Image (cartoon, rainbow, N blue to C red; front, top):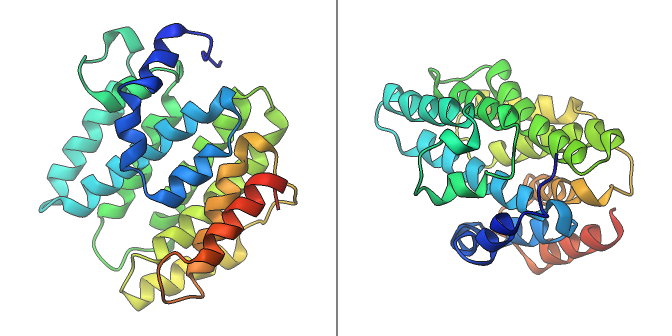
Length: 230
């Protein structure tokens, strides 16, 4: 259920939420900006949470510490919004998700990244599936249940291409690339509610073929997909 009509949600994104948006990578902000107004806040909240989980996993000196922090998020997101701790801007951003079970499950996906290296394909598929489930949920929450499968497929592909860029172990890279090559590619044009996932998938997939960082061509690709969905 969408709650964009609530004045407190709109006020949050006009005020505190701007700091979360500013912390996102430029291309992620651009991708989310192409979502319809009715679900754009869901995209910004999801991307900010995903970024927080990635930081927890990447910065933890001990896997157990990361597991404890992810468990806190999983348990907190499982509580009713009114019962969650006050004062955390990111939690405030997620108040619009009245059923946040899919966000709590995203913590499980990131926890799969804490195993002993080299991680197996199932670990990477767990994270990809968790991202895919969130994108599918955005499609449903936007009132278009028929977009859910395409949303899942795009989120799954995006996650795998994104992960490869951060791997140095060749065995892990081969496993993830194999998953990406076998992943389903939805038809186009992409429905607007899940169009940010199409942009992120396209940019991450382009990154598999180029050694440099984001380019002007990447920006133009994002704009094209954002406008026409392909």
